[in-house]
Image 1: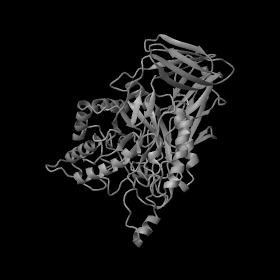
Image 2 (image 1 turned 60 degrees about the vertical axis):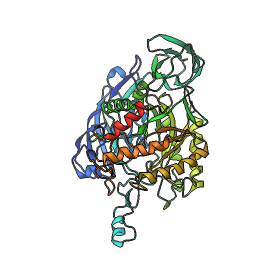
Image 3 (image 1 turned 90 degrees about the vertical axis):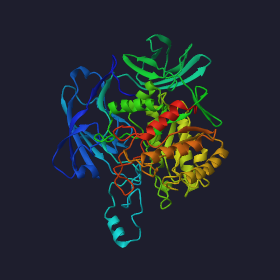
Image 4 (image 1 turned 45 degrees about the horizontal axis):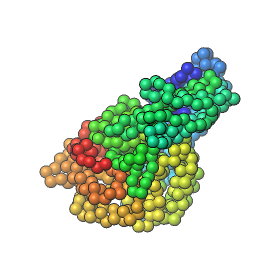
Length: 582
């Protein structure tokens, strides 16, 4: 799916701004901003914890100048499920809250005011991704099972918005909404596969178009010079003395493919780079790459999960300040605009599907819920959207599923997705799945991925506060993974630190303990040569569902939620900028 841009043949009309909004059990409409989550915009408990359907509406007019063009209504993301009505007519539905969808509205007239209504369902359950609980069970804690009065209370919570994951279930029209236009005969998709032969960049391309024309493709460098060109729906272009896209501190050099198809014109930025796994190494452009970065969330106090380009720029700047070169889109695909920034800024992305919460600690088999086809559909949508970004170097199929209690079912479920990703990705990037803290000896799935990615909290959620014992336990597990013979990334490890909480003797929740915790885990990582990355959890503090283990959210951030650095941020900066861990 192509990102909407303005060219000589295309225009983009933004529908951002103040819309009307209401809960579906109310008659009254109120004002709300789009794009943004609705939960924190309205200062009411109902908005914060609402579970069910809400409605958005506004009017718009497409200018008469667009009368002879194709017109498409596009949503960057609606969380979680959407029904879209135009002039009272249902024109499309979409399931899934983190990927774009669009609908051709060319049959609706220009120069006329039209009414747009979007119904949004934020409910999560066993058949959504991410997974929600259906029995009033909070993500953390057992709610004292077996106590009659507690069980009776939990029964009244059935159907509530209780996530089986540790981040707040922000919802609404969270990303950009626009109407874009194209000629009647138009370019609908472009796939680019770069490779390198000596000093020559090789660009294999394929174009999908509607019409009878023959596309003409020019490759333009950053000096606006044409360096290669070819006619045809697909072909191979060769760029002599090509400048490769390299992550920072290298040069993230971008070329532009200019595509002409009849009167339609489209431009796509891309980088020439290679990605592969070789033995226990992860290679970018044939050189060993070490992932220095963090897990991350789209999260801010007012917009919630709504797109915020100012915040994105701030976060990229802070990643550079840390000496980081990467992050994971935990635990869902991010807004497309963030990937475009990372392409330009040289930040590498592990691109993750919203398959989080497939873990009920053995109480329920998550692979018998019937989610496989939906999961597969989301994988297709993700790769369709992000396949051309040079910053995306690996696909993550999901986060922390149960691979221990149902090992055979888990293997078959995830292996099918693993094979699909390799089959449909034109660039055939490495594929992983992020492993939960588990009995890794029973896990048949994680070891079969291209890169072993695990989340571990020795010394925090287990062996709490005793870092000496935690290091020994971590070493014991690392010896197991060394024998698997795959590259290894510690994709989560961390300790909550309440900003400003200090202790002479470092103890849990103090900033001093957070520093000692990260240093202890890093000490173990440095002992193993098959480790290719470290992603402390988390980049910044973020909002979660309320519960007895969360005081105002998750505080494992290197930065506070308002991006003030903690002591840990300076400690990580010293490690990543001053210590050679490439």
